[in-house]
Length: 319
Image (cartoon, rainbow, N blue to C red; front, top):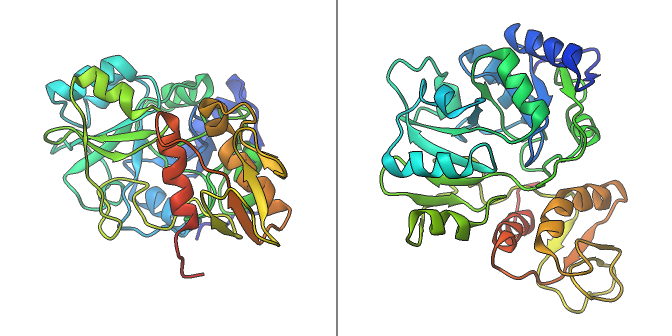
C-alpha cells in the first residue's frame, strides 16, 4: 500500500486543480468530486498508479474500474462506440451514466483497469471541479469510489479522509455531491444491458433507447463496477423494508414515519433520498450504530438504485 505521511486537502480553485493534476501525472492517488460520489483517481495508463488504487481501497483486482474523461471525443480515443452507445452519450453526458464499451486495441489503458476484459467502463462526469481536473490532466483517470472497498461511498471530502487518510496523496474538496449515488452502468458491447442501477433513472435510459433493458450481473465475475454482492456497507447490520423496528435498532426513515433517528426524505422525495443516503449511513457509522432498520422505499426511478445499494449494504459479509 502506498503510504503518505499526510494526505492533503486541496481547494477547488486553479492552484488546487493544477496541483492535483501534477500529483496524478507523478503516479499519485487523488480523490476528486463528481456529481455522483467522490472518485479515487489515478492515471489509467499507469499500471503502478492503478495498482495503488486497489491497494489503498483493499479492492479485489478482478473488479474493474471506470475511466473518467472530459468529453465524448476523449472517450473515443480509448473505446469503440456502437450507435446505441452514441445515442446514450449524446443524451446523458456529461452525467451520471457509465457505458461499458469495446476497448480499442492500442488504447494504452492499463489491464488492471479492465481486470483483463476486452471492454472498458467510461464516463464523462457532470461536476465543474471534476471536469476541470480531467481537462487539466488531459488523460483518462481511473476512479472507483474513494472509500475502503465494500464500505459506504463518500459524498463529501471529509468522508474520503475518514476512510483513506494516509493512503492517498490528496483530495480536492468540491463540496457535497449533488446526486449522491454512483452512476448507472449500461453495457454497450452488444445489445444494451443494465449492469448497475444508479444516479440516472433506468426509465430515462429506456425512454432514450425506445425499449426495456435486460439486466446482466454476476457478483462472482463482475464485468463492471458495483456488482459485488456485499458492497456500500456500514459497520452495523442492516435490515430492510422495516415498518416496525425491533428493540435496539436505529430507524433510517423514508417518508412520513415516526421514530426515525434520520430520515432520507420526510416528504418521500426519491431525489432527496438518493442525495442523502450515503451521508446518512456515514453518520450512523460515526454514531456507532450496530443495527440499522430502513423504511420501505419505492422501487422505481432513483428508488431502484437506492434499493440496490441498500440490498448490498444488508448482504451477508465476511467481516
